Length: 186
Picture (cartoon, rainbow, N blue to C red):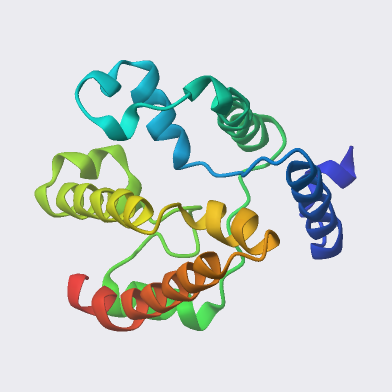
């Protein structure tokens, strides 16, 4: 049981991902979380309003189960298989986050409470940051034809050139966010 509670080494997790992706490729399936939104909208009848949602959603039922499993697994891992470990962040980074950006929770919580605390959802600035960020993630995933998991895990394992371009774009976008936009926002 101790092995399950510890972070797994990359060679175990990587091999498990490679095994799953090999099975999906053999079954002619593509993994992706963001595609489930289209499936859910189609199930709810969005196909009556937009042709984008008119497709055989039943062929994607297995991907919905992956999503359900990820939610249940995440909940179980966070609440029953973890002692709520705080990420091991370099003390220099903690000090910089606290002094330069006002993140007093840096190094003492899993997520920055200044953004992800429900109390802050009532404040305008954190609410706008979360809402606009969520919109950009959704728009970006749709515009790119998939999210990071779909392109980086499924697309790259299938040697898809568009996925390689998308992953490069994700990394560039992350670098621009951290180094250029983040200091402007906070």
